[in-house]
Image (cartoon, rainbow over all chains, first blue to last red; front, side, top):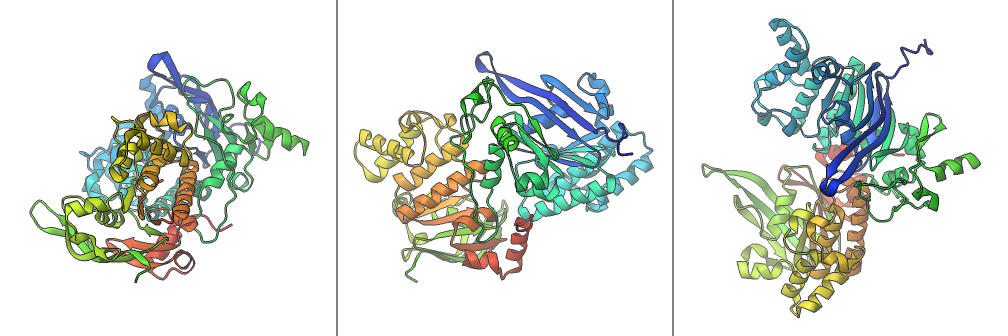
Length: 328
Length: 267
C-alpha cells in the first residue's frame, strides 16, 4: 500500500509556477518566481511569508483567479492551467478557497442561505429538498444554527461571517481548501475558535489545506509541513516541528526569531537582517536575500540558488547553509 | 499620586445616534500612566482602548459624547481646557503615533518638510535649521540616507520607514513628555515590527518618556511594557504590573485573552 503510486500521488502539485505583472515603463513585477509545492490528501501545508512575498498570488494562481505566467498546477493528475474556463467548474468541485476578509468575500445582498445554495446549484444536481437539507447540514457543521440562514452578512459578527465563508467552501465537498489568511482579520479569542473549527472539519472530511498566513503561532498550531516564501520564491520547506525547532535558511531564522511571544520572561535571540525587502520589479538573477543576509558571499549575486533536498523531508535554498551541513 | 503623569478617572461616554439617543460605550474607565514607565492598554476590537487614547488629545470622533470623568495631566483636567490651551498640550506635551503611518502623513509634502514644519511650530527658528533637525531626527530613527529620504514623499516610503518617520516626529521633533502609540506595528511585517518596537523602547529610555502603547498583541506587551491595563467592552477589567498580568491574571477575561494569545505551548 505504501508504495502504491496512485495512493501516494500528491493531490495538488504546483510546478515552477511563475506570475509577473506589468508595471510602468515596460518593467515587470515578479510576484511568483518558480514555486514548487505538493500537498497530499488530508494534509495541511502552511505557506508563510511577509507581505509582498507572493504567497497570496500563489493561491490565486492555483485556482486561476489570476492567470499564471508560467508553470503548471496539477490536481489529482489533471493539469488545470490548460483548461478552458468552461472546464474549470470541474476543478472547483475539488478545490475551494476561503478568503481573508469575510466582509469583502460575502455578497452583502445575499442571505446566508443564498450564499450557501449558490455553489450547490452550480456544481451539484440536487433536488430542492436535498439542497435545503444540505444547507442546513452545512450551517450546523460550522457551528451556526439554521436561524442564521435568513440573515445577511451585516447581521453577523466577523467570526460568524468567516464561518459562513468556510461553509461555502466545503459545500461541494472539495478535497482541498485554500485558506488565505482566514484568521488575520479576527480578534485573538475568535482566532482560536475558527482554527479549532478548521481542524475539526479537516478530520471529519479528510480535507487537505493550503494554509496561507503570516501568523507563526497559527502555523505551529495547524500545519503538518511549512513552506517559507521570500520575494516570490520558496527558501525553505520542512515538517513544522523540525523547521521551527531548527530553522536552516537565514531568512527563516530571522522570521521565526522576530515573532514576539505572549509569555512573561521569554528571551529571544534574534537573527537580524539588514535593511528592508528589496524590490520585486525586474529583480536580478541572484539570491533575493543577498542584500540583507548575514551569510552573504560574492557567489550569492551570481545566480538564484535552487531549493535543495537536505533529507528528513526538508529542503533549503541556500548554498552556504548546505555547504555547512555537508561539511559537518 | 504624584508618580502618575496622566490619571484617567471614571471616564464615561457614548455615541449619539441619529435619533439623538446615547449608546454608551465607555463605562467609568480609570487608569494611570506612571511617569517614565511604558504602559500597555490591551483589549480586542471594540474594547474602547483607542477611543480613550484619542480623548486624551481631544480628538475623539464628533459623535462621541462624554458623560462624566476627568483626565488629569500633571494634575490639570484636560477636559477643562479650551481649544487654545489644548493646542499647546498637543505635540508639545502629549504626542501620538497612529497605526497607518502613510495615512497619517500628508501625501503632498515631503517627509522632511512635514517634520521641519512641526519643528518650527513647536520650537520656532528658521526653515534651514528646522530641516536640519528633521534630517537629524530621521537619521536617529535609523532611516538610511536621511538627507535624500527627507526630500521624498510619503508614497516613496515603505510602511516601516513611514512609521519610523512618524515616531521621529512624535518623539524627537515634538519632544513631548507623554507619547501615545496606537497599534504602531499592526500593519507591519513581523521582522519590521520587532525593529520598530526596539526603536520605541530605546527612544523611551534615552529620552525618559512616559509611553502608552495601545495594542491587541500581547506578545509585544510581554517584551516591552512594565504596566498593563486590560480593557473589555468599554471597561477596565484589570490593571497591574506586566509580570503580574502575564503570570497570575486575576480577571476571567484577562485569562481568556492570554490563553487565546498563547496558541502554542511554552517551549
